[in-house]
Length: 254
Image (cartoon, rainbow, N blue to C red; front, top):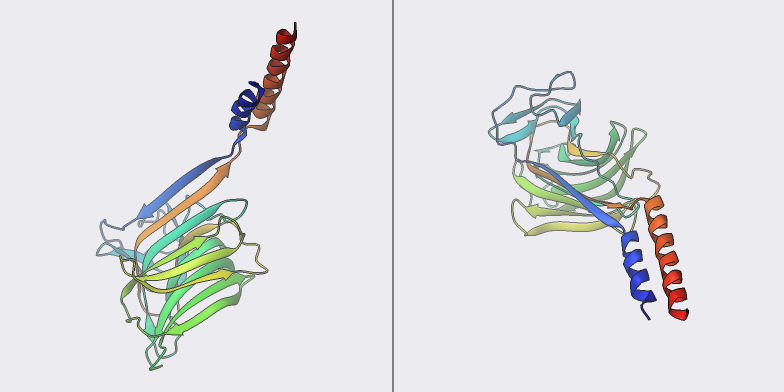
């Protein structure tokens, strides 16, 4: 009668544990000079790697004045095998008449030719539907647009909170949401499944295209990664338990 509880106790050790980790930055520190890929050390912080562009801290915010990417190098965005992440930061919406200026966040960043990004911008010459949000997967230096959505409401130069959350149950499935800065008021949200992509890890950070100055603030990345216990230890515990139950059963019969 007591075999099942004993076995359940042993099997409880086989359960998968979950490890959560978070990195964040509010950039509340002294102003820096412009930093680029040759800056060593990076005055913004050694936890950041500049792949392209010119970056600096000014007035407790990060800003970029040249096309490029800067990523956080201590924690990866993994979205496969039961792993997931939530990436959040405030991003300003740049604008111009050619509609090519964007500011956004990168994730699954491998190098300048391979990453995912969600970015926002304002076409100041468009009239209606001048605001836009784009989900772009870059593979082999080619951009693939999973979605481009046009709407009204973004103000050029204003900060908005952008959040990207990967799915626990599906690889390359992401929910991205744009909020009014520092609030839970949604401006736009959508679920995207990226097809044909092998980007399941890599780093997260900041991106800018097309010109103008983009500001960033309140960066945060939280990852959830399953951790299986040591298989040899588990097998040993299970074998020991089974032997114990057999001896216990034999002793009762005797």
